[in-house]
Length: 248
Picture (spheres, rainbow, N blue to C red):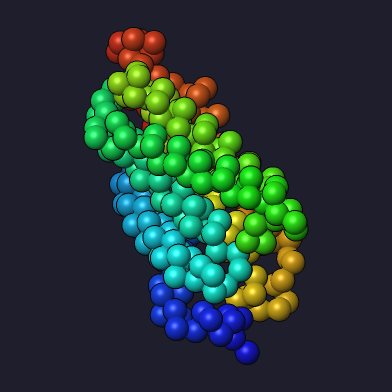
């Protein structure tokens, strides 16, 4: 018996692409957080992660838009997929740029979370004013929480724009939390939200809960390593003539 309702059947090939890209992205994500940062494996698997996540999330947005009005619960998927794509792309470009520089994307990127935040506020207000106190199957808190997250992301983008770019630990930290944030979106959506495609004996398993929230634990670990370690400190703070340091 298929876990997908009849309205979804015409889109099954796209769903297969979405699931395949998401699985590749999750596997690449776990490999990336375990690999030594900055080394060849980390850089290569990171590129795979970015490509897979952008594919999975762009397909998710396409499917959600296509199923609007046909299948309940699609509106948040539009903004969620767009927000996840933005996190991946901004996190990737953070380390692709030279330290202390910005490009065209950084000059306009704050408009993305601002626009998404406005959508979340609108949907939240619609839910508040609805007789059922919900919109497309979701209550107001979900929309307002994501509106607050979007506003924070926009503010951080504006801060980077004002500073003209990031260097050292601040630059790596931005890369880490944006990538791990998108990674958490994917792991949570799959391990918690898509248990219907898994064997029945796995439904509700604590292992799925651990796998879903593991990216946040890895994020905390690496942020601590970056902030208290010496590898990403500015040279003036580390001192000249310091010995070569091993990768994280």
